[in-house]
Image (cartoon, rainbow over all chains, first blue to last red; front, side, top):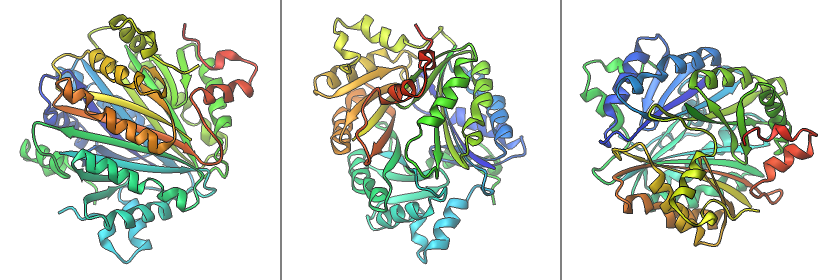
Length: 108
Length: 108
Length: 108
Length: 108
């Protein structure tokens, strides 16, 4: 069981605002029936690694279809074979070791 | 104004569980008076870039002090000079473009 | 045409030396008939992106087969649709803009 | 002793060609008296980590001074306290374990 972080950076877009590209990715992702969570650096997706890599393949062309001519795609996979991992586990791990919920975030 | 993602990966730790290292980082971070949010791939921190890089320097030795002999540290900085950015903006950007909150996450 | 950087970080290996894992990856890669180059942060591989992602899938299990129970895999893809790119292009690009070869490296 | 990989990605540049930005970075870097090597995904720099992070601070504003309004900067640091590491070590490590130089690269 693994967690994958996907970050897509279109280059040479004339505008520094990439929100439309992200929206296109999220629309496809939400139709795929997987567990995911968007953050400011990318989207976390959980699942078996074979499924996750096929999902990356299925999403990969999205920014090019939106008009990008160059895209840097970054994928980080954290894969454990000794236990199941899922989105939110790291937060739970810190909570279980500490009595201070403010170690997770002080963001509103 | 910038957002920085910090990920610390101790290598050769004999256990695949890195929760104690993460807890040490979060304890120091929460005492520093900055805005941050932990996720499964790292910790997001917002601020001016000079402040953020000094903060990385201040946190950097933590896993070595906990006993690690080799650490891979990954830092990604998204820095805009055309507008202020803060943690949560990307989520707000997708929400403002869409009527579907399920584009953000379907994670519980 | 794209360039992919693949970095594999086994976690909880008891030794901080990962050379045996890298050797296993390079052995498989060299039998695959693709163009690649190892550096200190990972291996660059060039090709069409579909081919590159299938290659990642084919290599992915290698460190687990060598005994790792947790692996962080990092993949960065630089993909351009406006021109062909291949390994060494960035160096050539800097050389063509400058008369100073020492801008590339001062490493022996 | 550590190796740092620095990658700078200007966003919203209207052109997908980033060679001028890379050239500016390399010019500054080569005047700093450190050991470095450019590759297709970034620049490797070796040194003590305090020195490396100060160097990143000194280079950081370069793409903004060249006109970029948004830049994604990626920094990966591999830091060992059990032995000295320098650029080229990973290649030497694979060579020392193998009789096949073609495991390093088949790139011309």
